[in-house]
Length: 434
Image (cartoon, rainbow, N blue to C red; front, side):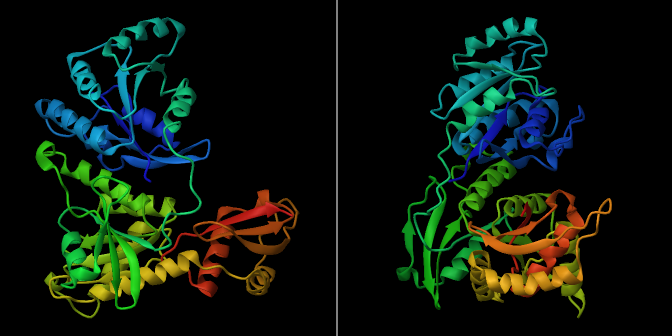
């Protein structure tokens, strides 16, 4: 089940700074210039072993000042509908504004957990000033300074208390495949084309979320659950913010799946939001397949496909061992290759390499290309094993793991991919003390 934390509030209260703090990144650019955070506004965070996705809604507000307030209200509606937990951010130095009051009024009507966060509480005197926010009637006030990080620990403890513990056993052994992508790339058409006319062998299974439908696919020797995110329902409240809405839905589907089919429009290529979704899938250790749809609408010569592929790989680097298929749903071109490739990726994701085979192959490579010595100390890697988990993880035991640098880790990962075929799957390599 996807855990999504949405940070809502009016502009310039410090949402992006808190986002950076919670996700330990510098990816949301902090600046007064309108629209700077639009490129990157969702990221995986982890607190006491619980993973969740943080969304900085500030990144989705753009346009003139008079559009601002309406866009913020729309986002609060969407956050109430789609997020697991809502952080309502206010600024202690300016106190309660009319827009804060309006947002609080919307949040009082939800049954979702809401945490009021008074930001810019940089010294003791301001602790008393934040008491006025109790007037919202939304419960406890969390005093934080997102610039220095003070108070964020208590906030995170409260936020993650709403998330269930990670379940190792899934309720269904069937692979789960989600088709995701920006609006109008052909997700609905792809779903319909895959299901074809034999609707009688398709059963709708109520999903874990109200709007995400799981469809049982069992045709041509392949059986899996297709997570359908294509139908954007209840659009009444979502005029300006369809992009924000689709991002929320995509994250939910992505976190609920084993393999993510990322659909692109051949006419647009890979855009910022696609790259964000790709990296989110990679961080969540999902299998990934990229499908370039509407390929029939592109003028081609014998190099077009290779050049297109090279452009995509350049944008998604360093994880480029990802299959790319070129399809046309309307012309029924290569659509069943999508199913075959997605199932192949699922096999790669769940495969287990016997320890004897792993050591036989990898120790010889490591012997021929050992890690570079540091300060006259030689690193000796003794043996390797695959760790249990939902995605491929390998531990290499050695005498001085702290001296192994990123380039060598990447070299070992590339050799694992070369010899054992982990196409489409992120893998983790650890070096541990023998």
